[in-house]
Image (tube, rainbow, N blue to C red; front, top):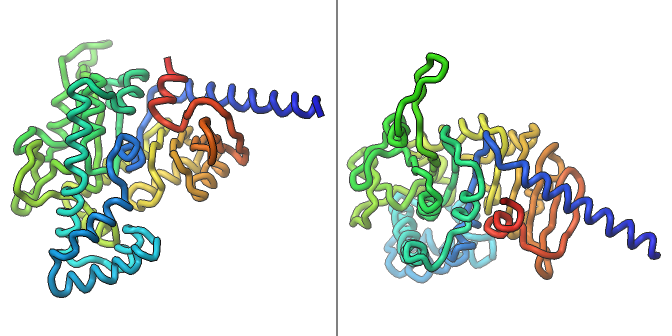
Length: 355
């Protein structure tokens, strides 16, 4: 029995040492990030259940056909199928979609303001900032792809010293122009081996194929404004309609750029993303399955995500154990649990394993 215990301990230590080695070698050139709502939720942003409850609470503002349609949607929500599943089953009308977008902004933006205010007062540090402070700042740009509407990623990047390229030029009536926005991070020109090279500040390219709280409808066009305006925000709500709306500008450009960066990535970091979005998932899953080194961090990893990690050649998934502090690692048909630090949390992982 003692020998068995010793061998088990040795195996666990070996697993943990391999995990540390993988993590510390992962954050080099060629990295692309995919960040889902889980990271925003970890900072205090409401999630889908809270949004569903909030929308149900304001359903009294709906009239006629939209009220009847929401009643059907709510039946699916009450059956514990979730908001997105309900909107997939019952596609909202254009007017109901606007109503959902308004309710989403109404719920999320006050909390976003509270979180960002605390950061700028120096009272808290975002997990992504802690992580970015520890890794290389590539002048070629760090792609960050997200379905999130909030601006926590942009704030985290700026707090870590990155110039943020949103593909829009300007903060108050910014036009979407990917070429010009890229040039905004240029700090000079150098000559190397008789070749002229643009020298850029460290920059993050933040791509939002589902829109952002600072995107507004401007006639048939779109503008980016950092102010809170009385105008229609351009965000794609969950459900079937997101695939239709995703082919409109600037959503389509962000989706295409996101897929291009996924295809070009030498390695991937996926944080708080549930792999439930075909806009990004098709190319992302294919790259992971093809062997692109990938680290997935999720507080709660679904069986689908764990299966992806188990079957892919170079993918590690870290999640929270069912009980106590520590981490569960799933990779290449292997699973082990390590008590100790919550390494599935991006901020904890950065503090404990990155120097």
